[in-house]
Image (cartoon, rainbow, N blue to C red; front, side):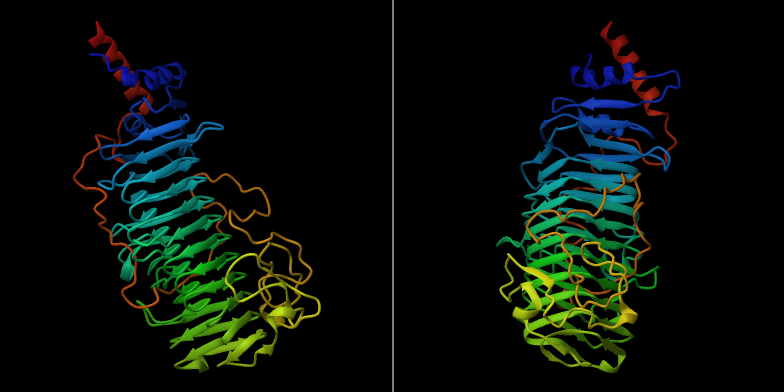
Length: 496
């Protein structure tokens, strides 16, 4: 018999079949077989999801591929909030094997993991919300995979449980990796519920490379707000820049090696505001830490047992104890132009006072905080001119002036608050790859102690053997429009 559940999107498809035979758009709602419809999409196709609750029971799996010139788009209808909810943790919300796909404006809740990417390249996840998962919200950590040219943009991730990471990207010991990617403008918070065993905000695992983590707002985590390891020699360094974090349950930002870490703000952490230490590789190496503002009642900056060069310059380091702590072969550390309050193990720290040097800062670790420098403090123009970054935390041009910390003196930017950090200019719409990636630098650092690595690649959320009856990427199947037209014809014949 004719399946009425297929009727709406099949009829929409037929109406949009042009002389070229290409599928343009499919409009879907909660009563449709959304999984089947999405798996029938081909290069250049667009699925537009209507408002409403899409409640899931069995496994929901996608295996689709667009092309560089014609990505597949899956998005919310204008003004709509399509909400995919799985009421138990027997499966992940979505399991995906995708290439050249854009997912935009969808909401996900419940399930085990939220979005589990079994494989992915040239994928954009933009403007989505993921919350109340029983495990990781967004994961790309299937063994042996290279997740390449991924853009994770302006998503709202919060209130996770279980291992509880907001984003778990890559595998331990370079078992899989994220490369040439962009993680920008996301809002990640409250990965610290009572049942959370780990709960990093954003975790980039060992071997990941050429990835930029930029302009994210992260707070109230159980483990570090941002955690990274090394590139393991796989490619260019990572970049961590323009992020703000507070009330991080462990270190605020923790990174092992092969990275530039610049223009970040950390306001209170259970460990150090910024830490680097040995984890899965050889320890701090090829690190550039510049123009960060780090305020903590514990250590502001801690570098333990470096194995290679570490540059620390033009940072505002404020602590009630140790502003800059280092041990091991501290001769590998080059420190210049740093200022702050507290003791320093390396170099000369320009002595400051938190009350005099900032517009309105404290060691409380709680908002409100205004950590722009004052004209009467020690931060204005006192840094090392050879290490000045081009822009500051807000994207303002530093014009070569060595103001210390994340802000330039006299800036009038965003007031730090819960929510998304405003972007300096309109963000270009990606085409499935990180079009705004600027050739990032690297990162190496791990959990506060070895073994604190986040969720395993097997979270019980999906069974690799659970078939979804969908097209396999690169299988050479017929164009989606022809397949769907065939289904329509078949359905009409059966109806007779």
